[in-house]
Amino acid sequence: MVDRHQVMNFRVQAQQLDRNEGTLADTAVLDLGVQNTGPDGARWALAVRGVDVTALSDTELVLLWTVRGAPHLYRRADVAKVAAAVEPFSEADAGKRIYDAAKPLKAAGIGTLAALDEIAARMRAVVSTPTVKGDVSGRLATMLPEPYLRFCRPCDVTHLYEMPFRLAALRAGLELQLDTSPPVLRRITGFRKAAAAGDRFDLVRAYLRLLGPATPKQVADYLDAPVKDVKAHWPEDVIEVTVDREVRFLLAADEEALESADGRATRLLGPFDLFLQAKDRATLVPDAAHVKELWPVLGRPGAVLVDGELVGTWRPRKSGKAFTVAVQPWQRLSDATRQAVTAQAEHLAAYRSVSLSGVDFGG
Image (cartoon, rainbow, N blue to C red; front, top):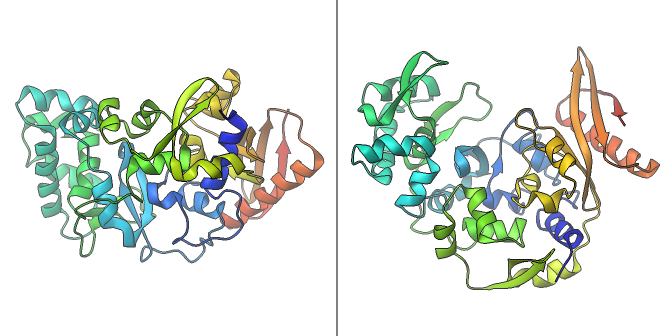
């Protein structure tokens, strides 16, 4: 039996949020993928884990649509195994991952995996040179039949359903060119999917290693996969851990790390940092009002992490040349903690190549 504080400390250490220096090679979150959403996305997630991001380029990193169809950053050297790792577990899993696009395909007698392969083949043919997403979608809409297509009211045009488009891209050997908006797709040089992902990149094992202890449902929710499929791929080398009267599981190799973890660090986590992606939100933030504040429907703030606890939210504020960080604490912060938060705000400003005007501690 362990309490939530020990779970939080374990995750801080497992995700290396307590270190000041690191490299791409030894940064564990890159095994599962680092979501790149918003200005303080994947690179900032690496920066708060001690990676010098000033010199990173696409020779070392690759951006792919993978888990939940979101863009994630990986080491370029790992792309073959990542492609194997993010494959749907089954036909049912593939159908769940593409949401409402599954219904017309099923009605037309087209299997989801077969549909993804068809889209991938067409996409690869279209993207012979770097191509803007909208142009790729427009071309595909002229090449694929009705079950693959939908009318988009905001765009006032018919194009592919979004999730099959995204999930087929890596099957087609395509990456997203870094720092492009709208996204530009291009072929991955020398792409070939590995025969197997291996333990290191296995998504279930990686979740347990970085966000454990966890239940099969929590892992399934993170992947948008059926619980049945996750259970079928559940590792054998796990131990039971009771957290707040709930039985969860942890890789046996991490038992000692869970018992001894002491995650002392102050960090400003981006809104989509992996630490905040855990599906046991009541463990991360026990107060229901704080849960709503940290995970609103639209416009997520970042989170302030202090010594293994989430103690408030933060948002960047930029007006002309002035850059401030607005912190909304959930408890009284000591002078030492305020100084540590301010130091992290300075780090954020340097990352954004601006000067920090100040930190506004609201409340």
